[in-house]
Length: 202
Image (cartoon, rainbow, N blue to C red):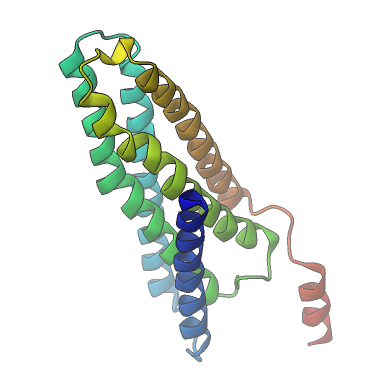
């Protein structure tokens, strides 16, 4: 029940951010100049790099715990995974969503004119929602109970299960982000059909 409630809260927050940015952006009569567009694009790319770095660092640190047995080192690896989440993944994810939506609204791309743009902002919302509900649980919520236990992490079934889910969750998040980066470059699928008709009629 709590998981469903948390999921709903994150979705409401994300959709509110998208809605406010879209509403505010459409009230601006002029589109972004080339200079400002490039500035927002650079900010968007940097935020995606930060996002990627956090996920890649999380994956490497989680993998490193399969090769070490020292309890303090395992603890330190998971502590740094938390830092990566707080200071790289979360800021990178939200900044990439905000800059991406603003670029879509304030340029000729639009929020719903192109399938690839729709896939990007919907995919980003899915990734953040997944991270905010499931990755948070595997990175933060289970951290204290696991490491406050008298059991060595490698002898603790809860830790081993949590680490396996962290691997899977990071791989899913990384795959979503990689997919979004690829379609951002390739811009596949073109315009939506109704948008093509509107352009021809105009």
